[in-house]
Image 1 (cartoon, helix red, strand yellow):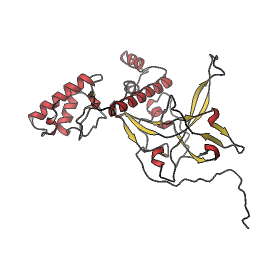
Image 2 (cartoon, rainbow, N blue to C red):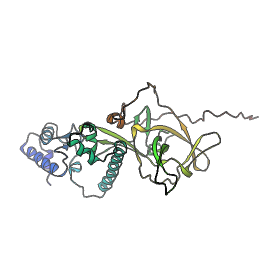
Image 3 (cartoon, rainbow, N blue to C red):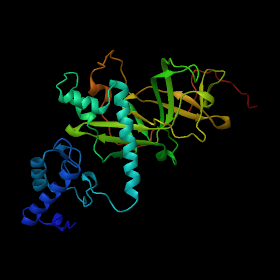
Image 4 (cartoon, rainbow, N blue to C red):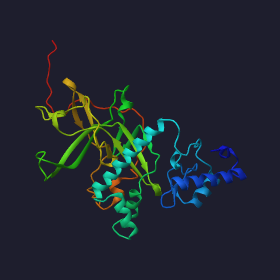
Length: 320
């Protein structure tokens, strides 16, 4: 497909005709409910617009610089690399659908039938989430949320600081045996190391940030020492079947090395955190998903971390 028109002046007839070609292609291959994500230089493939809106944006603002492969609008590249990226995106979308199902007890398709039928329980925010995210995601190496600064593990390889420890408290069904058909719900604490941060983008400028980790919750990889400290073993940890969690659910911990490949968990508190006794409504989708986290940003600065155990009586040694 000839795309030389993308380099022409936006007032030229060649550019106008090229925009119409793009719109024909995009709406034939990547439209949802009569809208596409807008690839103009301002929207940056993050806002859903109609055909008229997309045309106006592309003529006034131009395309994203370098967007000559329309991967977010149905065009598949010929190289093998984008295929692995597509598979990753599908895994993320499946996990997001699972999160929605666990929270609202409905599949994405059920949410959209109900919405079209005028069911008042289905808010506009929930409908947008049920439609699914854009195919293009944003990755970060660092993120600030809930008063914590997080870095992915890869970023810490040559550093003395640590900001990749995660802890999540979840309500999880458990069984007494393989034959048990009556699960019991109970709180379970999951510990992990941050491997990836991605931001899903939805229509209406909605964003949801997910953290990926391989998790340890119980079994032979977790134990307590005689002082009551939790110890974890991350050696040869296999991929968890549900590796993604909402960033808004996560708290931070630090890990200090112990003997035999074990790590001691050191809990911490959020910076400038104040308990205002605020209670969020469970029906508030925006609050639950924290789709626009307060002060969330990419961050890449070193921070000092205390590596000293607290709460344990010290031992005095005479060096003479």
